Image (cartoon, rainbow, N blue to C red):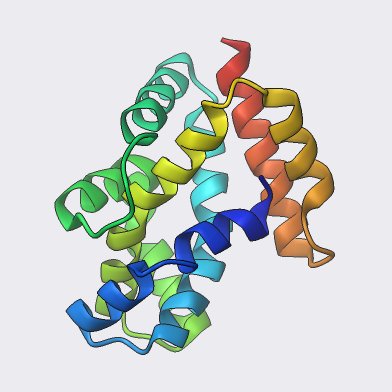
Amino acid sequence: MDLNSIISSLTGNNLIGEIAKKFNIDPNKIIEVIKAAIPKFLSSMQKNAGTAAGAAALTQALGNHAGQGMGINIEDGMKILQKVFGGNLGSVVSNLSGQTNTTNDQVSNILASIAPNLLSVLGKGAGTGNIGNILGGLLGGASNSSSSSNAGKVLGGLLGKIFKK
């Protein structure tokens, strides 16, 4: 698993179409927001996993979502966003909105739609039991772009923290 495979998992199914239809957002804008948001998600998750309580909560969330299929669950997504970003959620949404030329409402709806799906993808990857391969793929398999490489390092660190416990 690397950043590109995470993004492909989130964008390579009918989830984008569901979001586009439900919120009347251009599918290309949805993909743009997702690509910009994943490093922010991973960075915040790593920060949250820096405490024992945060790591335990993230481990539980990954386990709870690992078996779920792709789909929109705004209520669950908003809860996840609050836990991942906390008081920074507004600034994250605003930053992504400016970065992707979308409205705050569009970004919020996209983030809430993908949050449970992101945990599902990460939970499935973490649940394979072969953490060495996961970390190797993340650290070595990211593309040459700095955000992809950084996100791979962040996710590698995150999974490393979780599975050291």
